[in-house]
Image 1: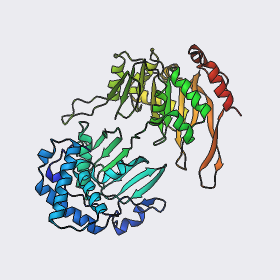
Image 2 (image 1 turned 60 degrees about the vertical axis):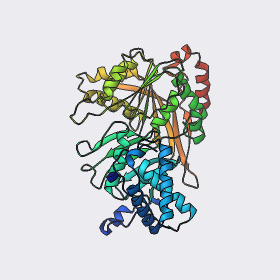
Image 3 (image 1 turned 45 degrees about the horizontal axis):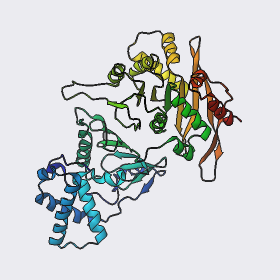
Length: 468
């Protein structure tokens, strides 16, 4: 829970219905896709919400929000609970103990937390929360998208919740600044796009932050990578191989990056650059940097490129960029090529070769007047390995390729796969069945670096075990 920051007018009763409500008849067919399952989250009756509205209004008339704001979250919640219990007694409201406890929690969520989102945020099995206006809330569980019965009172309440979220990291969302990236206190990544850009009310997307940090061993248990493939990734991370993680939206790029950073030695100075800080590095010497949007006057913006350029003045041993999406690609390559070995970053691409093409495109669009051949030589001299992550059609996430960058032939960058994931079919439940196998490369191009760290035999054994 967070300290209340909104005035009374902004903390009105979120009359959350037990169901998402009847959509407009002319849009009903398009709004209710048959392939999306509806899941029940609250399950309360209309009478429950009417009683809750009455109690909430009485609470607002009784409580002093300015005094409440001076309390810590636990004390504020206890104060609210005491007053609500008194109101229930005075009004002689008949309800079960379970309903009363549920109502107390709902009202605390509305005033101190994120209202209807709180039950979803509390569930660790949810990967994403997608709010499409006040009455359409979707979640992703196990790689599958489901429609919930959670809704907001109206678009005004949804915007108030969005404002509450982004204000915690010093940002804003309104008509003059309708797009905003932020994060929740637990590290969950948030994106808000509001009207007039979002036609049907604010669109809020939350990429949930897992309470328990995933490790490479977890990825092996999930089947995302084989145990020998995990050994190859561990060696890449530990031996300071410059790495680019590529993948589509929701493919697990950030999770994999987190796992890869787990192999960084604890005596190395690591600097991370992100749009919304979400990496969970466990090393003791980590500096976390985050971009900043412009203020109301359009001043004070700090871009990803500004952060990456400044990193070079901070004596980093490794630079980790949460996502490369613009001209900062040039500065990251410069860093990788000037003594900051083992630097890492992610980007959106569907294959390792496409990832390298995207890096070239980002540098070109950044205004650098360099010949294509020069840019490609810079890419080859900087990036050692591209790891491809993918979300398959059954919702599972797999590391599908580990590809090393070898050099250039003419104007073409040459690469070779160290190992790939091969789909073999589906089981009876529709889950994809496949396996990771080595392509038979005995000595990768970064063999000498691995030998420098004394792990060449371990690498050879892992690659050999993956071979057919």
